Image (cartoon, rainbow, N blue to C red; front, side, top):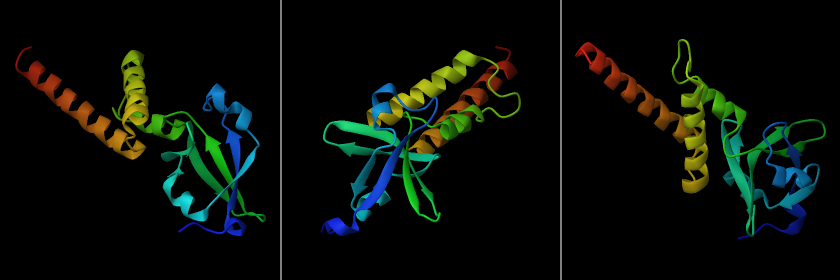
Length: 148
């Protein structure tokens, strides 16, 4: 069942520096109204972004709520992986981090692809990539230990 129009929730779209794709920039500052039941399905923050889809248009991001007064709901427009998720990927190696920048770039690009093409949730991507990284490191350590 749909909500009556007088219960729709205003959400103002906001560009995020270095995050918002060029095609979404014209939406910056515009306010749209959504049924309240829609809000539970659009992501829960920068570490778990979502998307708003209208017709063929999809705008990725996350809902930021400021309790005010007044209460404000803003859709922070980002790309497939927010800065928070990229930071989680960057932290996967621990220690010295990624000493090879192309390796980090590969993980980030693959994360974008998996999110965009398969709709994987950002936390699942970080978990998956952490497991893959650990398995590859364990294999390399075993090769070294075996004299390879």
